[in-house]
Each structure stands twice: as C-alpha cells, then as structure tokens.
Length: 279
Image 1 (cartoon, rainbow, N blue to C red):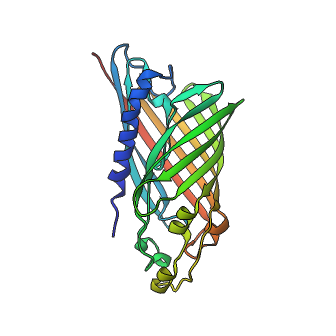
Image 2 (cartoon, helix red, strand yellow):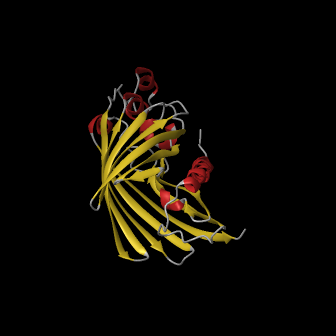
C-alpha cells in the first residue's frame, strides 16, 4: 500500500507553525534574521516550501524525494520564524522560553513509516505506518556552541516508540545575509522503535520473501550523524535554505538483516517569501 507523504507532513508543519504564533505573540524574539520586520501593528506571512531527498527507509541504499509547505506568521513586532527551527520532518521546534543561555520548547512533526515494497529485503514483512510526533527539547549555549537534547514520541500509527537525540552545533555568519550551521549528534531509540524499524518477528520471518531470520533489536544508540546548513537572505522578502546530513547506523540497528547500507544521506532545500499586510 502506497502512502501519500507530501500532504501528511505539510498539514503538520502548517499546524505547528500557525498554532505557535499565539505563544509568539506573548513573548517574541525581536530582530530575528531572515524573516524581515512586519510593519508596526501589521501582519506578515512568510510562505514557501521545502523539497528534499532521503533513504526510502532507515537502512535502505535507495533514495526518494519528498516535500512540504512552510508557513511563518508574524503579528506586529512578534516574529514567529525567529523561534522556529525545522530540523526535519519529525523535528519542528518552537523556542518557547530562553534565559541565561538556556532555551526550551515543544516540538512536533511527522514520522515516515515504510512500505514492504520499499525494498527487496522488506517484502513479506508488512508495512510500518506513518505517525504524528510530539515532544520537547532543551538547549544550552556555551560560548558559540549550542548543546541540546530532544525527545520524540510517535503518537499514532502502529509504532509507539520514541527517540532521544543529543547534539551540538555552531552557527557562523559569513556576511549579514549569509550564515551557516555545523552540527554533530547521536540518537537513542527505545525497544518499540527498534522493533518496528529494525526487528523481525518469527511470523515476519516465515513470510519474508528474502528468507530473513528472526531478529530482535534492543534499545540503544542507533546512529551518529553530522549536518551542514546554509541560510541566505536574498532580499528583505526572499530567503533560501539548504542542508545536508550524513548518518551512520550503529549497534543493533546496523546489524539488522533489513539494512542494505549503514551509510545514510539526506538533503533539504527550501525557499520562502514574506507578504506584508497593513491593518
């Protein structure tokens, strides 16, 4: 059964960014780069889209394209975009509070499942449903480095597992309109997650077209990764963003019989445009 991947996360992205505007109106970050300033007492709306490429499933050596829309509202001097970070389809973060170098906030997103026809090794194993993701994150700025940890809980579909991600990043401005980010991190996954995405039950083994043996994947560190990103404020209204990520599966995830490649690459590119409206 084929899944409709574009509209699913697009709906989540719009909901997260739009609902976050209420909190943004209460405590907004002034002068955020890359979104411009709305007229006092006015309303601005940044709209655009993101397209990317990623493995067909975790462990696949084949790739597929995906995309989703983005919406950043701004009321008066309150800039929501300055508080939102889109790290991936399952990781849209809203910075709710910051003080003394600390920042915390909720996150939401969409986890892509997989179809059994996404790869030869999956045939007969059944599908893993897509699912909504909710969670939270916390970060601390130590000099130029941001250290953070985030919790990602899948709350729909047939997988109820969670992941905890640890990372560190450095942002650098090359010019007033061009900045880059370098990030390293690792991911812990619980038993439910690893069982769903890397395990093979006895029943699945009997149905496996590739005659795969049963395999139990325990909780633990499932990957290490590095990311690079660029943001270019082309004009006061136009902005371009791009990022690339390399991840390496490790532990029980890497040893799973369904893994075709431990090396996992992905990339995103997006563009947005700001519309101003006067009250």
